[in-house]
Length: 119
Image (cartoon, rainbow, N blue to C red; front, side):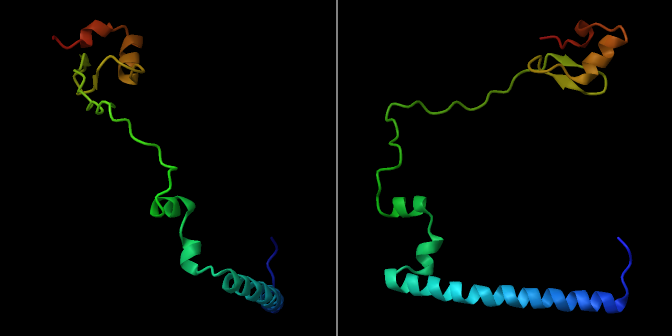
C-alpha cells in the first residue's frame, strides 16, 4: 500500500467519521421502534437476557429428559498398568496408537519385547 501524506490521511479520517455519524444516525430510528414495540408488548431487558432453556426450567417445563431410576452410576476410570517402558522414562500401556519412541527404536532394530515391563 503506498504511503499517504498527512493531509490525505486527515481527509480520509474525516470522510470515515462522516460515514460513522451517518450510520449511528440511521440506528436511532430503529432503536426507537424497538423500544416502542418492547413497551407495547411488555418485554423487558431481563426477558431478552433470559435464554429459552432458562425460561423453560424456571416455568417447570417438561422439556428436560427424565432421569432413569435404574441407571447405573458411571464407573470411575481405572488405571491401566504400563506394559512398555524405556530407559528415558517413556511409558506405554500397549493401548492406542504406538508411540513414536517405540517406532523409532524398532526402526533401529530393537524389539518391542526389549521394552516390556515384567508383570
